[in-house]
Image (cartoon, rainbow, N blue to C red; front, side, top):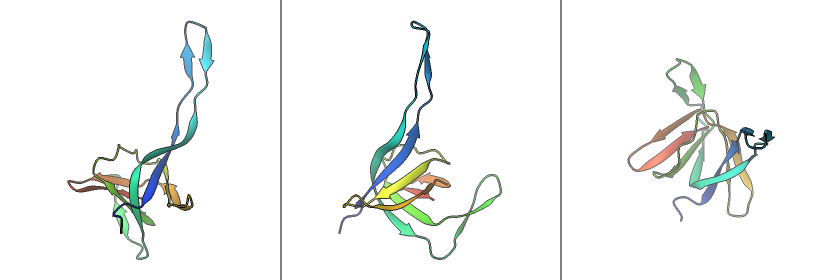
Length: 107
């Protein structure tokens, strides 16, 4: 059994940039970007998470990844893809935590 059998992808959007040499705008891009391996767990218990803004968030998925995962911003849209290319889940990041042994993402 693999510890991290799935792929984690993040929807990345870049803004348009201005090129002063030509005086024109270079359009931004958007699309799914591979961020690393992961495993996911469905939250069937309705667990809630407190944030600094004192709002309680109910998460539906917990994603676990290796500790060297690139930083993911709260509010980013992520998805988990299985080995056959099927989408297992998609959602908005509510919280991230980079621990000593692994990284966790609450969606």
